[in-house]
Image 1 (spheres, rainbow, N blue to C red):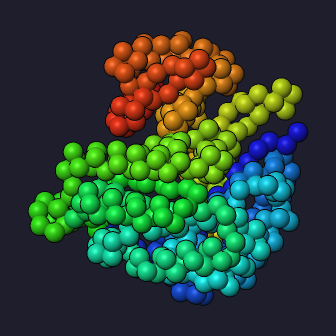
Image 2: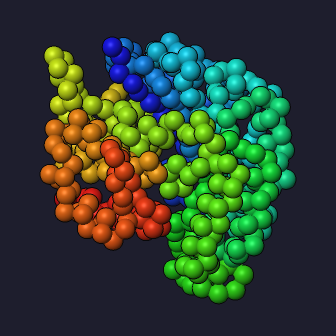
Length: 396
């Protein structure tokens, strides 16, 4: 019986770097993008023997901006994927895109290639906020892209939004939510801004440019109110919060991300991509060890390595049993459904209380987590301070 696998393809190209972004991506020429796609396809073909053990349940093209790919480039990628991997006929196949980078013809060709879910990076409906973020598009550009997505026949659509932005008010965030809900997307990812080192935002924050004036950061109270507003407005429209920052109509949850939080094996393809692979005992099918791989974050070196038929430079980490338990808890508890105690026992051969008993008891007394039959989950208050709660499950 074939094991389940998720594929992630990294396209580290964008028109320009946004002011808040610390992802591995940068601008590039058409020639550089084409050379990268050719290398990506060559890497895909390296997995011919590996792929025999798996059935692919989800595919995710992330970046960067995958929607910079031409129709022919996307077609080529999926021709190679289908030659090497067994892809479930009902697999969820997602592509991230930025407004203004696609048209109806390109979208139809993407759909024909196999894409059946799109994730659009909007962030805000307020043009002044978009400009401050360094986005390449306006809200009007997004509306044009949304219309093209609808005309192309996509029925599974996510919109990315971002709150707690410099200069953002409760009113402007409410306006963003109201405008997006009128479009009736199947899924919304609503993230709160994190100031990451190495970004323009972090530099400006350190210089005090967000302390006052037009770009003052919202207060902690306002950031909390924005989060509560998001939950209430989305749930009033029938969307449910199934993860700390993700909302969907029933049946439209992102299966790829759910697999990540449930620690399904995944293979990352492309420069900067990450993988989680299990080594099983051939006789018992029990997991002997798990390995995490990270491809080198250098596009030119990646292309050169592939073209010269050399081994891809990777960082790898063998996960100890403790590492695996930690990830099971702090990834699984991100979901509102939480984690299964029975699965913990099945995976690790120990009752969850043997490992985390005192921690669980203390967090339950503080009303940060709650047990419901087989499940252990964060409370509403626990979700509010999830970083603290999840860090309590680190064993090392």
